[in-house]
Length: 298
Image (cartoon, rainbow, N blue to C red; front, side, top):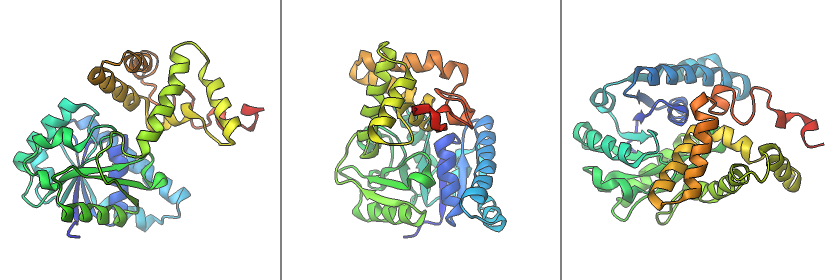
């Protein structure tokens, strides 16, 4: 594996998690975001992750200082990828935005750079036509939060080079992930192919007025003897991302139920900046959500 310098495109929640995990694992990382506020948000996330790793994961001050020293930030795409061996893309879950990004990326990235998408639902085949290097393009998908889920799903398309596929599998392992190879393209990979229908079925119960979200969570927690229900997971995943995914599927598949979910999330949460755990408010309020109280399911 010849990967040393990594560019993470997208300074949002998941992109910032990927950038931190890669830097903490010893790689040089440049975070690219076209907006200054995106870069500022990413830097703030990284300060939070440094404290989190010290308080809960046994990292020393030297460990987090060294990780911080490996991180840089820029709004200039050409500058961001000038030395990149691999790009990990975590930009908004919009096919048109991703197509435009890869067209621009292809114009400035060095020949050796591998392109990977962290798309939650789109297939590599949906995007590859907008790259100049189909053999070096594939998906490397992470769960939220990256260091806890430890899943690195690797999914190529029919023209992905087997050698590049193996390099990305090795990179996933080197950054601390359990590498999960997929043998063919699948919308949602393994993780979201299982999780998204579960989340959507739960949200439908609320959108359609069948039950409130607390009742849905309590039912799941009691029946399966687990500590969280689907709406706690929604808060962890991020309500903006959940809305974007449902909007994408609703428009592409002409699915009224998906569009209704997206509208519900936007109207009740996203438009009010209630994005889940990142803003300390979503379906639950943080840092002490109700579902963590032992009396919640008594």
